[in-house]
Length: 244
Image 1: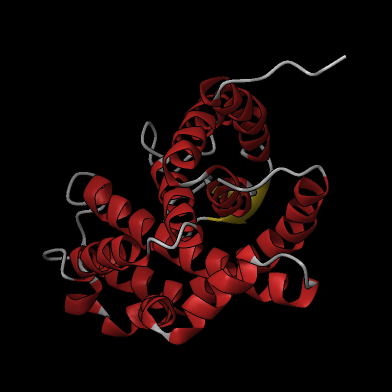
Image 2: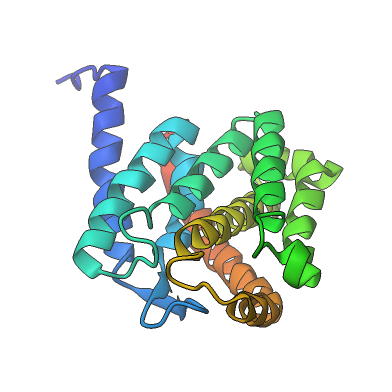
């Protein structure tokens, strides 16, 4: 008996119904404490976000990450910026989807605009208090505009060789998680100053500590996303599912 034909809208709905609950589930799994926000953690949803973007595309992936993130933050109470804690994950999914779909110009523009907004945010932006903070975020932007990014996307889309797929997915996930960090820090500034953390000393010490912490955190997220993503994409390839 021939399998029924599914419309694109039905397929998209099915993908959202599969990945949004999975994203929510990952929101219950703490990965690392958030510096400067007591009792809150980065969750494994940060690992899942760029993979959702790769598999579902920028728009459907961002919607899925937003939906799963909102539900996860509401149930797990793990979000640092409730009710908008879903934004960094949404940013990661959107960025990864843009990269995988070879829409690099939009990704570069978004990354650069949000990074400038973060570092120059008056009067608590890192440029005013501790400029060294942004060094690893600029490293992410450098990779985004470098030839390595285009090679990595080619490797990720040509999924025949596992070693190339690992490199491609790792670069995409690294850029996406760095963009998520930029967005998360900007949201932290907007929601934290001046009502919650009005002291400039707090922000300076936070940027100083994060300077050595967040690069390790982002590398771990990238490694875990690659570790999960490569076999996941291989499995989807085996059932003839192509990332959007």
